[in-house]
Length: 342
Image (spheres, rainbow, N blue to C red):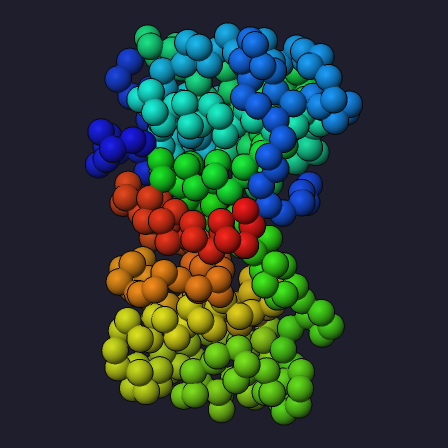
């Protein structure tokens, strides 16, 4: 949503009509390619863009984007519910935002094929009267499939970080949260063996707690548990640990930063998603995450940014309910993502 529509309903989970009318790609930004226009087609596919051979999808993109006045961001990818029955995550309108979206979603390299996954989000283009013009599904973090059933020609976008940040600013924070795994790899946090911390002492057990930034007050209890056991603790045990942490770190902002620092140092994916990461999320008060990081100076470092993305991936439906939350997430995540991933 652009600035003129802040506060308009359209958060995740709401079904709304038209308002007013696993691939693992390489990291970073690709500079090749141009937007789809009649005089300069999108960079070619299997020929590596060495010719200006026009692909069928290019003429279609030029025609529909010339008529587009509104783009809905919808939940779900290919083969999901009819578009008019989908949860509306946000929308983009206005000449400036639409031009930015057009560039980010049509600039790159066509692959000549399709990703096997159905995708997680859909862009639905509409004309000035609200009539649908076309659609694209988003796959992974850098692939856009325009009218897949018709063209079967996925586009690897040139600036996947920019596209994700734009969509987050307009109501779809889950798109930028998908960069957590790529950022973890760039930070050297890909898991090894064993995949999760072991119970008891030793370099694969309690010896890992200090390096992960686990608060001092929690280390004795966690030393007796494996990472998986920590993620499976019943609520009563989690409440006991929360009380110990509050007693040790009374300031809510300091406590939130300590927990995020821990979350941002866990290996990906098992420990972060199924081990200690589950415990950290249970200990976090979701209402404090964005305000704490917004007030934090300087901007979040890469590990705090990784923690923010990991938190957002699980909290997008429950905690990111304000239309401005996605914009805040994008503002906080952009410096580290741009510096590390391009």
